[in-house]
Image (cartoon, rainbow, N blue to C red; front, side):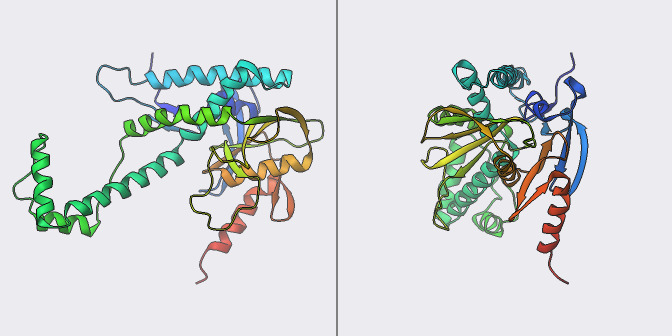
Length: 321
């Protein structure tokens, strides 16, 4: 069997809940904010990166983690189908879906980029401390030799200081470090999601569809917070809501306040839900077609106007020559 190399960080089975067609022939409408293009394509062509979950460890199947995630994702897709059929978000299906949501929160290119930025800043700070003075550098050299690392004699304090302070280098975080951080964080996020009360939203007839994105789980504040609030807000904070489009006709809204319930979603709520998805996307949004609604400023717009809205906004941000 050929080794799977195209790993989806948003599961194909989940994306089919927003697609036209079934199985491998399912297609979604895509709007790409980076290229400012809109197109239809197969679900398998989006929200994926080569070797995203690959384990390059001797003696371990490189696809072991990808296969494990696939089992969870398959169970979650079946749970989503049952929730949509019964209109009840409870029991084992609830926990399976919350596990999927936690995975979507922590396993994605945006999070890896954020972690890589933090790691790079940290290691560059350590580098600055290593060359703070000649004595510190000699102490570092000795520690490296004692640990079994080769240190070239021609690498002087002055040459290393100039290199570090010049800043003309990058620190690349290994994929395995990202995977370890994701697995360590996963259980914590599951716990926080499980502690919330969940509202299952149902779109009835004549309400336009929901859309999803390459970063489909989002966190919003339910109160007005002071501008410049240090650290923003997180998944463990009160007066926040976790928002997740379950399918194009069902949504989830989770808070620490209130109670579990199932409620109808009206036209305005669906449009606001879609607008939140647009704000939270990394690069792409996915929809069944272009008939969905969203709020742009104070105006309600159809999905077929989204691309032009993004182009107009991009044009405003370009410097005037």
